[in-house]
Length: 447
Ligand SMILES: *[C@@H]1O[C@H](CO)[C@@H](O)[C@H](O)[C@H]1NC(C)=O
Ligand SMILES: *[C@@H]1O[C@H](CO)[C@@H](O)[C@H](O)[C@H]1NC(C)=O
Ligand SMILES: *[C@@H]1O[C@H](CO)[C@@H](O)[C@H](O)[C@H]1NC(C)=O
Ligand SMILES: *[C@@H]1O[C@H](CO)[C@@H](O)[C@H](O)[C@H]1NC(C)=O
Ligand SMILES: *[C@@H]1O[C@H](CO)[C@@H](O)[C@H](O)[C@H]1NC(C)=O
Ligand SMILES: *[C@@H]1O[C@H](CO)[C@@H](O)[C@H](O)[C@H]1NC(C)=O
Ligand SMILES: *[C@@H]1O[C@H](CO)[C@@H](O)[C@H](O)[C@H]1NC(C)=O
Ligand SMILES: *[C@@H]1O[C@H](CO)[C@@H](O)[C@H](O)[C@H]1NC(C)=O
Image (cartoon, rainbow, N blue to C red; front, top):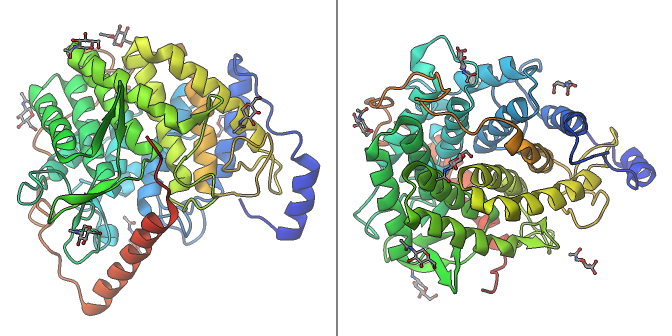
């Protein structure tokens, strides 16, 4: 959304009392509201503009968030039963796969983290589960790409420090390499769980169990009564000093992963874990309305953090379908949050730019790709029960797989690329900024 400061302030005052109209029970109302929000989201897309790169969003949105945004638009197409955007989504997802078709494109590889690759992996996993229009090249089939991400990420499972887990960064020259974090390891968990259900191959569920046990053993999984919470990460070398921030997307990655595993295995262990993570998710709601508790109250959320509620909404929707016992709680949260989010979408020159804070019943003055994604996901996920649940290879899915996808000499085990001094310096600066914004802007939630 391009905002012209003076006009937008005036317009903001004029329209901020109206908000986006939303009747949460009406398909056409949800379609209308989400199509306006999606239009705002695509204002940030570079790929349809002169000189822009396919698949990329404008600065300051990093490549990982583009993976998140395409995932949101796959959901948009599916839940609103609208295939208008299918061609551009498909083009973006297939253009950014990289030389080895594993989402480590050379343009990104100097700064790419495990979590960045993970979010593109999650997008293509959803494409397989939603029977999203198949690419003609089998190397770029959605399931094959998801397996390629799984294979290359699981190859980086690192038992040298901390008994396992994934480092935040893929490459040693990036700061963050010495940090093992939940989002990277959680992406692998989420993809493993979904591949287990989609393909029926037990190797993936074995991996998921191993990853879960690592979270537990290292102390990233916090148990309090019958609730599970999940912390941000841990210093790799000493395997101590847990960074105790709690983010919505981390909770959602593990929650929905457990729900997929429960649905697939029907094992009570995974059901219990799902329910405990759901109870822990309460810290992210007030009056049933979702918020990014670690940064939103102080209005210090970084650009990245401002998109987290989008993934959380997506993962909650999937959980409600995969573990029906969670549905009542989740639909109550999504309904209240969707209404509140719609009211926040009353800013900008277009009059339906969305804000960060959904408690205000009006626009809060913030805007960006993250805000559009969050409102879009929370509203469209109201429709999870109106459409078929995620497909599998045996039921409804048609994506071609390749269990050995993704390996190659250049990137399989993250063997260092040849970088000159300038590239390395650039890479380091970017990651320092990212780490600073992570460490500087959160508050710890009290359990
Ligand atoms: C379908 O999606 C396109 C692109 O987002 C949008 O312009 C159009 O209004 C949508 N149609 C309906 C019926 O929602
Ligand atoms: C890589 O960057 C170049 C130069 O900006 C651009 O032309 C190309 O499309 C990019 N490729 C990908 C996969 O992003
Ligand atoms: C852990 O924290 C303590 C106290 O702040 C500090 O002295 C120690 O160096 C930290 N360990 C690591 C591995 O960062
Ligand atoms: C699941 O939780 C219930 C209720 O707390 C408990 O009785 C049961 O033993 C648990 N099952 C497993 C397999 O842990
Ligand atoms: C798995 O998900 C489907 C679709 O929502 C549901 O019908 C089924 O009951 C779920 N299985 C279990 C064990 O809950
Ligand atoms: C929650 O609802 C109560 C009662 O309506 C209200 O006083 C309170 O301000 C609300 N909390 C937030 C964060 O909006
Ligand atoms: C999935 O897509 C394939 C190929 O387009 C199609 O033949 C099949 O009917 C679709 N399955 C469902 C459940 O829609
Ligand atoms: C199951 O997955 C594993 C791990 O990716 C793979 O090595 C194996 O070939 C797969 N088995 C089948 C039957 O696809």
